[in-house]
Length: 120
Image 1 (cartoon, helix red, strand yellow):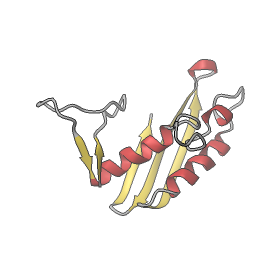
Image 2: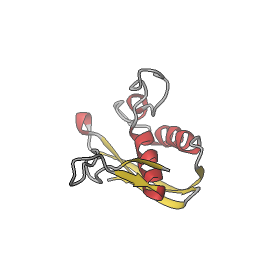
Image 3: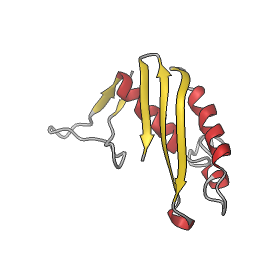
Image 4: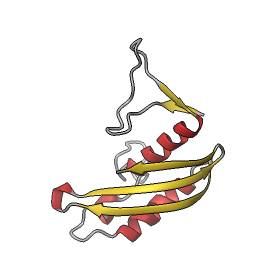
């Protein structure tokens, strides 16, 4: 398995010293794919507007419903073909108003073994 490599802090794609797109492989690729799934907002994908996580309904309402958000994330991550199970999953909403952000750490058992995915 491979996918485009991402920076840890901004999740941008990585360009190597030769000016080429950098790739991540195996466990790192799985972690990047899982993180991308969690960061995808429902309605964001033009070809499947029902795909993605319902951030607007669960996080950005006046009172965040973290339990509902975590359930949506669990369903999405467990639907990935290389995921066997979610071992642990901690999340919290920080900030308020327009500056709300979900921070999370997740350990997922995959075909390649356990990977850690986080957005802190």
